[in-house]
Picture 1 (cartoon, rainbow, N blue to C red):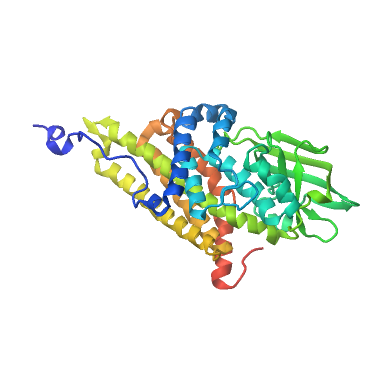
Picture 2: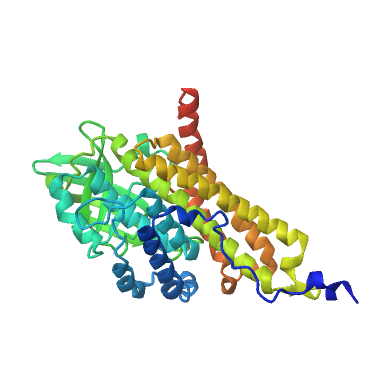
Length: 404
């Protein structure tokens, strides 16, 4: 009998379920919360999974999924009132993870709309602004974007914004450019952050994309998050009313309040990206046969899977604790930054191992993993690079700021 024919190498009649939730974190949610999570999972697996690679290759957004997405009723999840659904921060994190587990572009679309655009209005808007915009956005009748990053200003937005705002009676005149703005090519409104020429402070504005002087051009030739339609926005004497200035956004500290919350969401999203790559790799290992047996039976392959699962489990635990801090009102900027930095580093490592496990097939969209590898590069950079988040944490633990 050859080694390949020994009982130790036979394929079991029933293989273990492919599930990246090794420590059963989903069981920390209530029954009602898990129903929402499973509803999102079913939508992503049934409506998004079969079509997403085709749209990724074509560099297009699958507008056909929007009716089903609206029915989920999750836009504005975690906010109270205004047609939104209040929930724990953990549930919002699990929703982000479930989306990214299938496709990071869809979770990014959701994060930009719900976290950044709606979050800016919820945290920094007046009561009138909340009443006007949030119910429409919760119903996805209006889709939002978030305009902070600029062509020449990425990590330096706190002190280097070049987009300007000038008060002119009851209006403001905006001039400048914004880059990498998700949803901007087809959405309805964008939160524009600009520096007030009079006092030098950063202020936020709700700008409808149809406003004269607001121009947007689709960014082409991306290698990551190709389903997200990122725009280059040019503002040329774009006039907005004082009533559209976020009334409680008076400095970059207010912008940072929005970013701290959404940075936590990106940490969850990166866990989902890693988990999706891992689960595809595990299924592949169970059925791919080399040397007469499934590659999942080889020691080196099991070691790769072990390392991937370690990263996913440890970062999910980190995110869950971060969500608890959020709900207890204890989360600080450095907490969100540590999670975003650690989780994206471990995600990048994990998707690389998944691609390694698949060999040459890892670069084919047919096997899904290559898409996760590419998309991970964008998650690694946006909402604060690892280096910037390291400096936020470093400032908190040493008492010294190393920012230039």
